[in-house]
Length: 188
Image 1 (cartoon, rainbow, N blue to C red):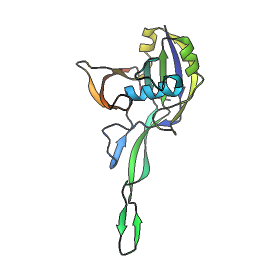
Image 2: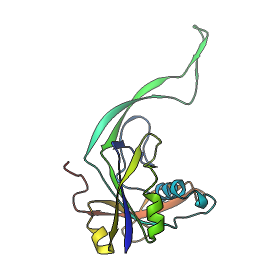
Image 3: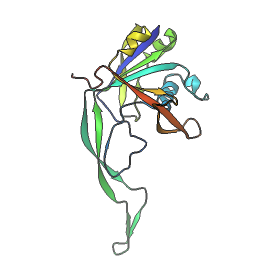
Image 4: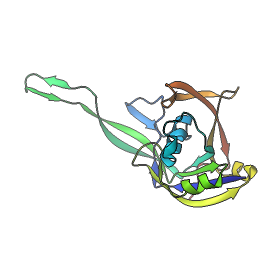
């Protein structure tokens, strides 16, 4: 039996680890091990000093659409304008493809852990991408398998690809493969 918390929010952006800050980038459609570990540590602060994922056993992410938004960015460095006797930080515009109405299901093996998660908000990756719990469910593994969504299954296999570097584990490479069930791009 899995104990599942369904979260929803108005929008979300997961910056791919391969993204560059010039031009256009689209939200990643799956959650990496370090993202799941960060969510787990936010929900269960007693795990802050432990490495690894211990309570969230599965997840599914879906959304309604991708909307391209513009973001103004500044470079890290400063530029000296000698004739004007001032320092400036150059600016540019970045187009981001943001998920609209993301829905996230987090599954736990333990009911108490799921009930605690049901009382907490989470963020997909950035503080402004807040998702609130909207439903608590008890599902079998096969029922969870058919929930619409993208799920990155963690680990190395013939299907795996590198998904980034784990900030919680000495920046070691992370691997996984994507499982897609139902219609992960919802028609709501």
